[in-house]
Length: 304
Image 1 (tube, helix red, strand yellow):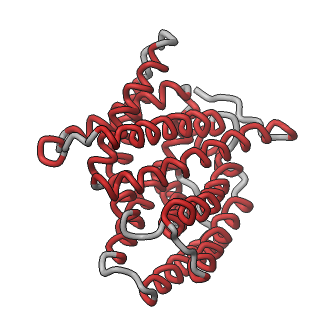
Image 2: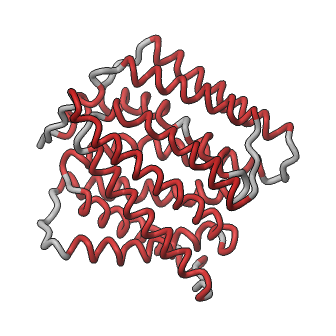
């Protein structure tokens, strides 16, 4: 199945605005979840947020009398759900240990990793410019890590960086799956199955790690769940109507929100090393976006 994704003329503007809006909501969710992870621990913050997300997504999904998802969609949902469960835990565990802006900046390596995953999974060819872009991305991460190593940070900061980089690898594969699912399923269906499968994965270890939060934390967890659901609806809608090459680079708008929210809520200062490293990563990813005009068509062919 193949949806229309014509991005010529003004048709690209609305998907871009929708994705930008979704990423703004997602950045706000990251800030809320950082606070919840500090208070409850990464696992409990993610587990209870997804429980609330399942309830919200189920109400929205079943209110529309949905059709049964296709076998291909179900397979992708399971793969993506397991991936996101691992990705979310690692990211928020790391985010407790590093500033919000630096955590978001480190996650920007994901689109460059996605390039190589696309080569393996979708048969895309990696050109010289892509190799150069990857080197820029690696240099950017090295600059950020060097800045953290030389700064006044706690001993767990390096573990936080490592967790976020591992999460970025998982997120890279998620970017490929996101476009694939957007072409064969609607936003409400994707939102529901993502929430329920991730929650099911987290539920497997709940007897060992789960602890019911005090009532004071439920407004924050509920707010994070609402922000996550709204973000996913906006982003999925945009990815269904525009090629990935036009949208992946929008991920970097999250850095602006991370700087503002990290400073306002957590008093986190942003170093020049973080800004310089982010600039290198973003430059590499933009180089890939500008030089790969056939990426979206290849992805569409893979799910047709």
